Image (tube, rainbow, N blue to C red; front, side, top):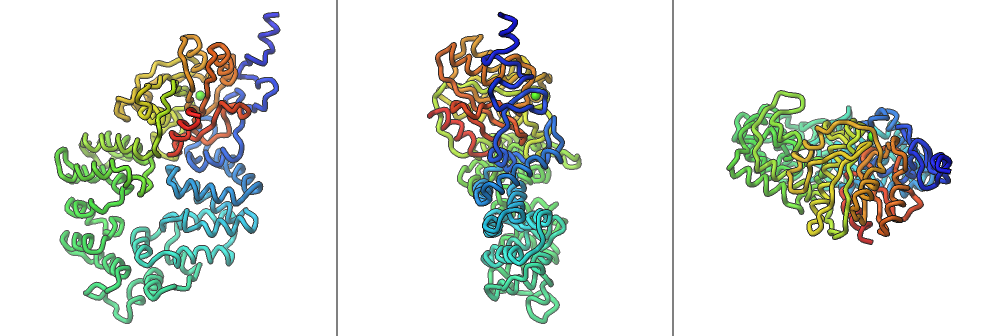
Amino acid sequence: MTKLRQLFSTRQTPQSQPMPGSSQVANSAGGYAWAVDDWMQLDRFLVLGSEGGTYYIQPPKLTRENAEAVRRCLQTDGRRVVARVVEVSENGRAPRNDPALFVLAMAAGLGDEATRQAAIAALPRVARTGTHLFHFMEFVEGFRGWGRALRRGVANWYTGMDAERLAYQAVKYQQRDGWSHRDALRLAHPQAPTAVHNQLFHWMTQGWEAGAGSQRNLPTAAPDDSALQTIWAFEQAKQATSVGDVQRLVEGYGLPWEAIPTQWLAEADVWRTLLPHLPLNALLRNLARLTANGVLTPLGAETELVAARLTDAEQLRRARVHPVAVLAALLTYRHGRGVRGGLAWNPVTAVVDALDQAFYRAFQNVEPTGKRLVLALDVSGSMSMGMVAGVPGLTPRVASAAMALVTATTEQQRQPTIIGFSHQMVRLNISPRQRLDDAVEAVSGLPFGATDVAQPMLWALANGVPADAFVVYTDSETWVGNIHPAQALQTYRQQTGIPAKLVVVGMVANRFSVADPHDAGMLDVVGFDTAVPALIADFIRE
Ligand code: CA
């Protein structure tokens, strides 16, 4: 009897076999899990991207699998795909906008007529900068030719924008991916809606001379129109002969840092002038430079300004600063040297602390649940390979530690239990009282192990830990355990009488999940979607 039960039971099945009667599929690790549906796969792709691959799946294959899922979504409901892309992109829910632009390009090329129209109409909402536009143009050529509708879509990008914003875009992002505004305008031939647009289009395609009349040389006085002033200032900056010249142009005409000739960017005083107006994402990318050149010092007024801007939740939201961008900046900045060498600086503690706070504030507001939570981090070997959202050093393991701390920090009145597991329980030294980089350090050094995602539930059962919900951060590549995670949860529920829930936070864009899609007490979410901590809390509270 005992032997037969070991050989076949619907309550305890080794992870190397599918649960009887379930729709489980083989994962990449030799175990069985569920395949998420194509819409969840679309979300994972939009948020996590595929460029980093996973421990098991190389980037080209992972990208292909995701693109196939997108294609199936497009066949089922193309306009829903476009709506999802707009929602994720406009709300800044994903670390990078590239997957959104890629899916939009697929929709513009492979969708039915209504979908293609919707995709092209959504272009200005998803491609909000010149760089975004160029990326889209590069992507879309992989899926279709330059028909009339698509050219008109690109033309609308230029004509729908007010002249001031367009001028700013033109000096800020001149070219990317082999595309420039000149190329785009020559392809799309927009009808200028205003005389100023007309002059801007001229300048973008032929330079200043043809746009501003017959004079070959720049006018010495600024034009009256503020959009034209921007390009005038941009041209003036090329001829600047002193720091003071550059400062006057930045102060007078709001030139972005990208529009300033490289030789002036070595000057600390130029950066002091730029600092109050620097968009937050640009600030994040330039913290090292600002410290190396002496603008940011331990007790400096500039440091205070930067810290205040970085921790302003409203500014973070408006600038669509993603927590991953903050985390990436923090992980680089604290080291005092760049990934590719070269630049070195002494990290200013106040800046590191501000980044630590900014990370939490960049997520959507979360209401604490007050429930008993077990946050379980998969720290197995596969979680230490690949990179989330294409960020170097941001492995799924590091990313999960950061995500767990978001929930742990929110749940103030009842501290969640944070545990680690691979094929066995792994002692973790992280807590919400730590600074983020210390927590990252703590998980980075752990030894590698095999994977058994049932461990958190088995551990809670064995140790009498009451849990209203288990939140598991994993790639769902579970294979080594002798009971499936879903079965372990069922057992936990039966033996404790607690209707415990399971939230699976997917940390890579593969197809798998250990959450049973037929169990309403289990939920799949995508790691590093800024809405996810709130979604987790809502699900657990219900
Ligand atoms: Ca693993």
